[in-house]
Amino acid sequence: MKPAHGVKKCERGKAKYLGGNGRKTTGITKRKFRKNLKKIRVVENGAVVRRTVPVSLIRSGAITKPQAQDPFALPGSN
Image 1 (cartoon, one colour):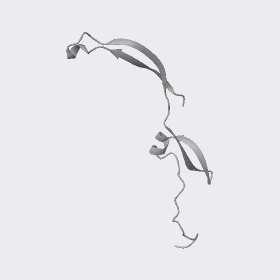
Image 2 (cartoon, one colour):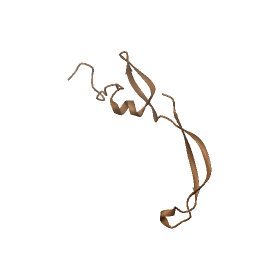
Image 3 (tube, rainbow, N blue to C red):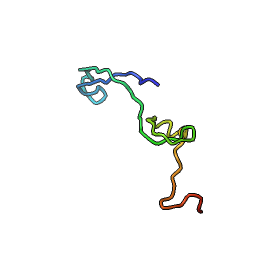
C-alpha cells in the first residue's frame, strides 16, 4: 500500500474557549503516513526467509512465523 498524505500544522496563540484570541497557523508542512515496518523471519513456501513486513499483518496473523525450537534438543527426540 502507498503511504497516505497529510499535513503537519504549527500554530501559535491560545484557544478561544480558554480565554484567548484564537489559534493562528504559522506553518503547514506536507508529510506522509508510512507503514510501521519490521524486518522478521517468515515461513514462505516451506522455507524460512527474512522479509520486511508491516506490523499490522503480524498482529492480524496473516504472517506465519517459524516455530521456535528448544535449544540443545536433538531432532526427532521428545
